Image (cartoon, rainbow, N blue to C red; front, side):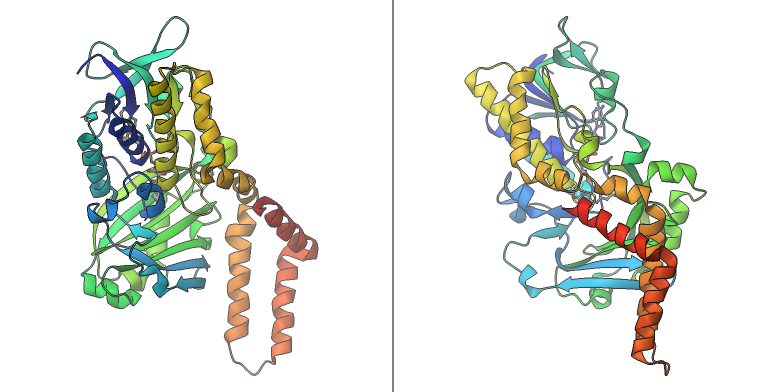
Length: 434
Ligand code: FAD
């Protein structure tokens, strides 16, 4: 390995790959360092790929990338212990020439993305962990140290794409530890079934796919969500909750996943499947208020390391790729102009972020994480139960007249939350949603 590069990228997830690819394609001398055996070997995602973010980096990706199914149907469920109430949106418009969302398997996808990074000319070093950043006497980051190479490797700029924990940044004094109430722990399994079985169970043809996002009593009073995504010959099932909630509860992540899989609305969908993989991973869910310092002298942060996840819409990889691309475009511009990678100049990345959907969306929902966490018993327990009870009262035909049913439903809501509580909840949600 040479000892001086234009840029070093720490990590080969979507954010690091987007950054390394964009810089290498523009002719910069880029070193990317990944601790896993290969890009993707350590990574966990649901996983839905949002095409738009990748299209802006590799427009022809559909011809080459390993994609599973394109999503034609979205199901949003609130669940209690025996039921789900759903909002389903299915449209044949999603069978378009260039579909908007795909399910993917991260290990395969990251490997492909990494091959594009290499093709673009970057040097990719796997099975190597960056242990710390190297600084000069003024505190400017001038390179990295790894667990492999004795000497530091130098670069004009280090792009931290190391994922949610941000350990390199932390160890180097650039950021605080991630707070336990702003990160979720998610567990996920892959359930293998013949493709015909998946297509019959979900009413799909060819490579059409369905995703289910669920919330309610499935998280046993904790702030979190569950999901089920159809792949070509497997179904990904997972559930995640805020880490500080797990710490206070008696329920382990694996127990939660077992209960979710056994739920009467989920069990028939995965019945008879062969379970092959179990994975656990953190997701940054603190939103806008949890974003750490993003740039400094000689360094820049992208992806999960910058807490760029929109938990309300279950988007992460697209924010990772977009922040990776925007950081890279900043670096490329400065490199071309012969400008320093100083904190002042790198601020251009933050300006680009502000103008993009990334910061606009995170700002829009900045109040949501705290609101949900403060009222988890209400939003993940009381309301899902009330909704289910209301549905059951309404749909059961039992000789009770409809007016009386309406009154019973309203009475149940008022007794559980009181009128003041109901108005207060609606007001806080409306304010946080603006
Ligand atoms: P990562 O993908 O975490 O990559 C970081 C990389 O850095 C890793 O390869 C790691 O090995 C490497 N690394 C870390 N430290 C070092 C070091 N010191 N030296 C060298 N290498 C290092 N997002 C979506 O868009 N859609 C979804 O459906 C979705 N579902 C999800 C489901 C689950 C269960 C989870 C956990 C996340 C999900 N996400 C989803 C979020 C998404 O996975 C992340 O936002 C995305 O992976 C972030 O990309 P990244 O490159 O910033 O970080």
